[in-house]
Amino acid sequence: AQSVTQLDSHVSVSEGTPVLLRCNYSSSYSPSLFWYVQHPNKGLQLLLKYTSAATLVKGINGFEAEFKKSETSFHLTKPSAHMSDAAEYFCVVSDIRSNYKLTFGKGTLLTVNP
Amino acid sequence: SQTIHQWPATLVQPVGSPLSLECTVEGTSNPNLYWYRQAAGRGLQLLFYSVGIGQISSEVPQNLSASRPQDRQFILSSKKLLLSDSGFYLCAWSGRGGTDTQYFGPGTRLTVL
Image 1 (spheres, chains in turn blue, red):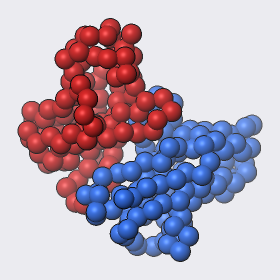
Image 2 (cartoon, chains in turn yellow, blue; image 1 turned 60 degrees about the vertical axis):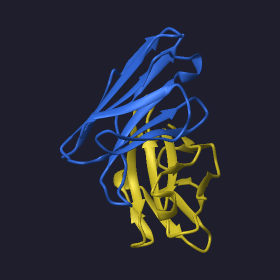
Image 3 (cartoon, one colour; image 1 turned 90 degrees about the vertical axis):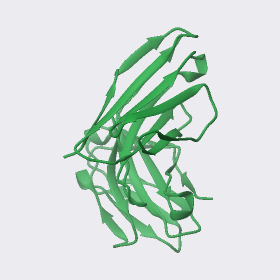
Image 4 (cartoon, chains in turn blue, brown; image 1 turned 120 degrees about the vertical axis):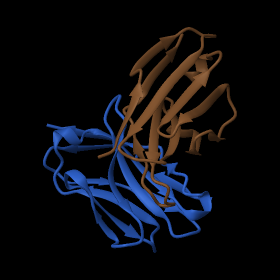
């Protein structure tokens, strides 16, 4: 069965410093991996998606993630945090065996300090 | 472009009352449709998904039900709400391809008192 672990429930950074949100996954088949962002009381917005093309995936708002099969990781990064980045971030995996149903991590709350 | 709507945005209901939440998608045909619940501290849980009109699959046994009366309309219902039904309900759509991305609506905040 597929699973995803977000290694930090809460990350706090200062505005202008780098962001790293960590995600490890488990999948018996070639996975699709996603990062979504959720601002308070809002729906989930897709940041980026990996589907076996380039291992470095660029998303919206300056975010990117690198798929590392040997480490079963898909960490999300951004060079410089902005106040508007404060939100909850979800790492998500799906694969053909799950009939492409999504499995969500428990989320990482990103706080950006001025 | 495709858009997804949910209403109402917020709802406060007494225990034992009925529920109807609606989700509609614009700008696409034959989407897969999904209902999720997000309870405080418990992540997202898939409740139902549908691959076509009248075709509903239930992921979790509970007192909720779903219906898809039209291609781009998905309804979540309950005959009698429980306190445990409180949460943030999200509708999502995807294309028919296996790896198609799911796109989420704005959500409905349900509080059962």
